[in-house]
Image 1: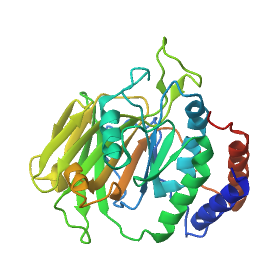
Image 2: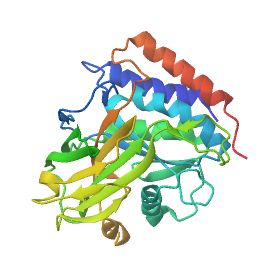
Image 3: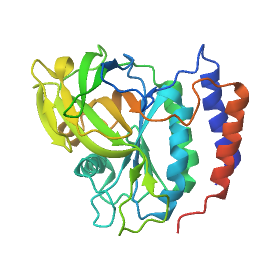
Length: 313
């Protein structure tokens, strides 16, 4: 472990945000909002997808989980983080949607993915809490080099039947639509760990993927739907792709433009995304308005946390 390098990478990344005209946060809506009128996301899909394979029984996962929520907020709208709990017979959640996404990662990285393991845009698996320094560097490298933007936008509405999310617009002239898909991911925040399961950490876990749906851009058909009340597409994935799920206290919805599994299997594409946008319905750990002093304090605190984390056995 090299905490000084962690400090440098965090400091550079966060100072890049400070240098912008404003510190743009991901769209985070406070749970006091009823969502009884439609709310639209920003029409931007430049966020990096950071995926974590984790378990409720893993001690090091339990240590890092509370910290990661603040990390996501500190990067504003630049990253979207999601946690996958596998169907391993021991995890307390084991949602089929999560195992589906783990299998997707396994197309290139194999089936034996330890927990915790992090992937930034599907690349360079980083395992263990001691690898978080490398994850930060991966994020920074891609933030500095990734220039393409996918225009993704969807709206969210609460109805008597549940929460709906529907695509409003899509545009990416630099990417061929063939062999790609639009994917909705539904995350539950502060999901309670049921009694009777090994749990070395807090009574809840954050960013837990509970549902997903995939719409093939070439055929405008639904190829995957897991954990959702309903999925619909009439005119096309880019026009009216819609999901509905059971209401939750706090949740996030991610809309992602990515390659199909067949394209990945045929070595025609990578695991990374062409764009992602997030709508988060939860309380915010990081204030909307930051000063440079706040940023520096977060960097110092983050370095301290990394320094005291025990190494994975």
